[in-house]
Image 1 (cartoon, rainbow, N blue to C red):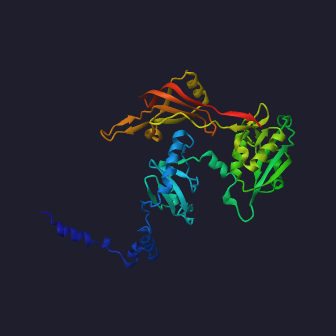
Image 2: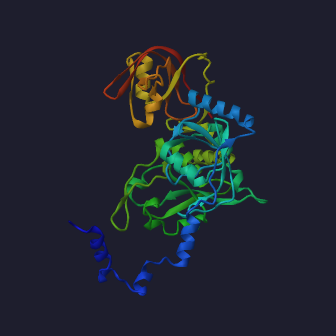
Image 3: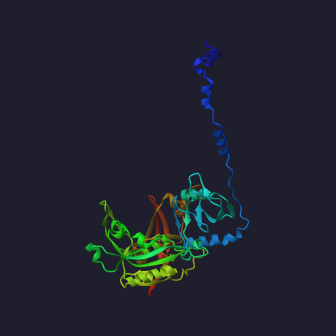
Length: 411
């Protein structure tokens, strides 16, 4: 019979298990590391949700945002890890609207990103002072940002954040003419580069003949404008959107033999360029579009919002391509198809608490929008039936209840 106690004693008495004091010290944790570990073992502060005592200030705002989303004035968008969250903006986390009311004093987080305590107001009447990076992770991982209204973007075109006792010069708008000898460029009439620089334009173009953005050729300065409180990215986005139809399509080869497609050259008369920049500088450019055929600016005239009474109706808002929108309006297209994805699961289906099963959401009508512009064409279309097959939701369409189409006038 085996004597277990005796065998254990022999094992533990084995000389191989004997270690010196020096060897034992290898397993000691230095004092500074013990101190650091102890400090990390418990968070300094954990944000908690609590009742928002002044929620009545925000209740109507949340209701308006829901209305804007329902009518298409706002939309949900996915954001990236590098997107800055902004005070006064709305976000969706775990299906709930969140208003970023304020951001406290910023400091660097462990990953060197700016972090701070926030005041976040939730539509359920609570608030929390979660960290900015925590909110960002929640929005990126399981949520959305809510787009601004067009009028909100316009009001911030010249940002108050840049204002000091004296207006801040943020850069220069410039208009350039190419001196290229390439026939594909030289023979193009009314070809100009419209750009923005934070440095003097003369410095910016000093090496033009070696830079693809300048078509690998010298350029001539036609005009420059010193601007204050103007965001360069907003300027570039507006100009590119306005003149996209007349953007030069050309490929240039740099000194290393690599090909490039410059984006800031446009075929447009100089007097129109002057008018565009004038309206950029006074902020009114957002009200205009460019008519390439007539070579003039057109003022956007936005049709009144929907007057159709949708009280008691369940409306599904969708964006749709112009070609399919026209087919629906003509009666050619009778079914609108939507793929059921993880990101749209709650939009098109729901779980019945009674039996735990998932069912299709039933809508009375679709509010269809063409594109994302403020003055986009839209329609309210009756839904007669909703079906599902092979991962696709089918909305069978009936009568056109309302059609809203933008109009323009020359200016």
